[in-house]
Length: 122
Image: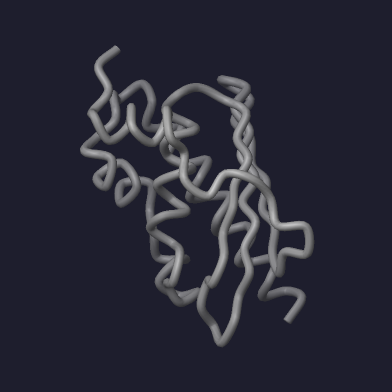
């Protein structure tokens, strides 16, 4: 399977990995078809994501897309982050093999779930 240099970099050197113990929002999603799971933790101040971390159990593409999602979302407003799509994540990674596009759903969906949890609590 051919991965771009960006995918390989984010897999080998994931950004923002870990968890935020007192996160403002947490979103966890899984894909039963492949067994991958992603959790995204966010901290929000003045309507912006000021800190973001993730934990992923999955393949190289799942780890890389979660890493890239956190990079793209950091500093964004909640509306900007909610507008992020799986295609935005895949494009930022210079593409994903078609069979791995579902992995980019996990990270974006987990981010959206974390934001939705934050909004529900606010």
